[in-house]
Length: 331
Image 1: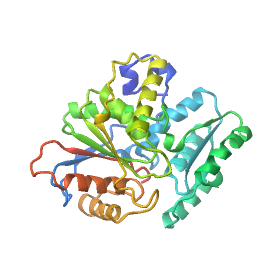
Image 2: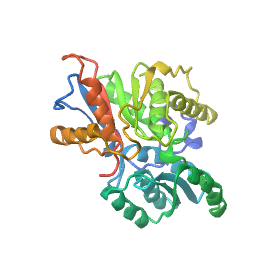
Image 3: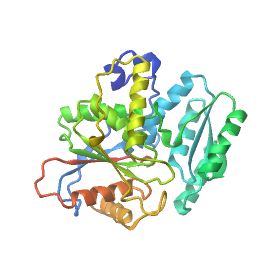
Image 4: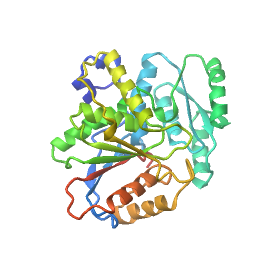
């Protein structure tokens, strides 16, 4: 278990909310100076660099807290959900195994391509127990049966998006504030992030306020049509995370969590989860060719498409930058 910026801010959390160290921060930041369609300044915080063993991204940040909580509660099995090509499920299985936890995955259908087929092979090799529940309704129905079968198990929602998992991005916001104070990047006006289950955006909203960056807005680019993701849902999770911190001993300041600081948009979703869009594929090519930045079509490609669209009409010389959060994990 390791101390974090959150522990330093609120020492009472060290025993009540432990963290397993799975990665190293701070993750690098740099300006994306060669994006041809972005008139205003765009900066990158590359979360893909977070994590050991070739993994990184937002999933590892969440798992640091979720797996530590499972160990603290003396659980032996983690039950969670993902699509057929789930990076979340694979990361959970691999990191869980390193810390003595078995993983059970309920898999929901998504469009199958070469990546998904290769990912299914990786999931089978990970040691996780796979259940092809196919639909959201069947997955919900299977949950009590799996809990009955696997004793001493804990259920983690898709993407690790509960109050404990969101702590990963409370921590990241504190890390970002330190980088800004150190001069590694300018203070952004907004942060653009893909949203598949809501935990990353919720943690950001809370963390930015705790870090003294409450005026920074979060643009949450929805990439998943199978979950109810809107401003109310994400803010409710942020407040649940604040309640958890208080319950575990943190003396939090008065919080605003202003709805005006969060924009949730489905404009770049396309047909649905896992379905690539022309704008996302273009954004992938632009990021790779002009910035040597590896993204993927399900999450970060759609968020980069949003960045390019949102900044295309900025006036040259605009001083308030947009920060793109690259949550892509596997490298």
